[in-house]
Image 1: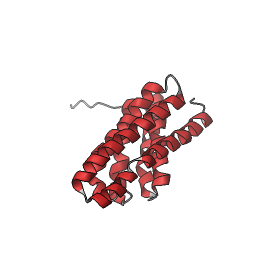
Image 2: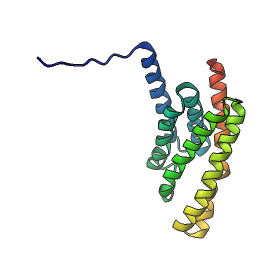
Image 3: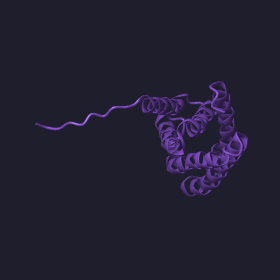
Image 4: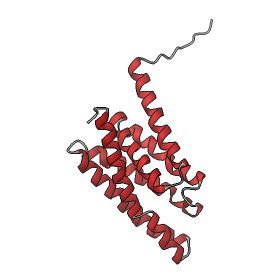
Length: 170
């Protein structure tokens, strides 16, 4: 007679799983809207929300998928494919920095995390893109990964704050 194991989820584990799937789903579907001014804040908001609701480890998992989907759907031009690992690292920097500073103050966490993500993407994109593409195009592409990243990260923090305040998580 074969022994079988049954996996049961308690209510709390089920709720965490549902939250993770919802956050991951929104972050993964956001790049289907091919407007960086809309997609960026939504993805960043999901990263901030994931940190608060699920913890930084789960938020890191969420950080991996949106940029890959953005490339696949055309929001990110194919020329930026070499930047995908750096964008993922930028998202992870956002998550870890926010998790560290939010305990002192939510807005301090958003500000420092957004700035460090911007700084990392701006500096790496300047170097990587200049090595890979023509100089006149490199400047335009580098601009996509500079100030707009700071703006969309802060906007994501505002969206996250509004949502988290509404559900009484902060």
